[in-house]
Image: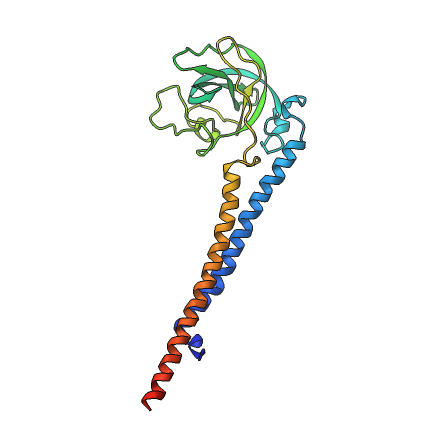
Length: 250
């Protein structure tokens, strides 16, 4: 009755099912591991001392930015040069702009420094001249899906959409560190910007999306298996009915 499973058409169906089910299970396990990684990162972050209270370290000792170094106090010396506004940034429920100033170091590269937050319509204060020592919370370069980041297209001159070395290097005549700091102390007229939590560490909406995707992939695996059994049963019933019809005619 089940000889039809060896036909070319059913070979294709069988191979598809044999490949689809393990792939769905693998993807479900992978999504679950990502959620478990977020949980472990959250536990590690809860047990970790407040990075803002740790002693400031030279910038070079904290690069590249990792989940462990993100938020750490970095100290760097240089001279302020170009200054930009980063619009549409919210602080304490109000919308305004970050004041972003490029700190040119002795090595030639520049570190983007958020000197503070400015409400809409206010004028950004000029950056100090001469050599300055900056201490601030280290942050990784933003990406297009970072909170508050916007594309730079259509922005007026002197504004940037996100704090990213990839975008800043195109508008300044020198190299840019793949990181930035938010200064602990802001000058008059600016509000200090608190450091953001390291990416992919908290149990946020994205973490629970991973958990939801886990369930979806296992459902897909069960659906493939269910459809395979249903097709086999229907084909077997059709073969049986055909056989009964032949015997009746005989």
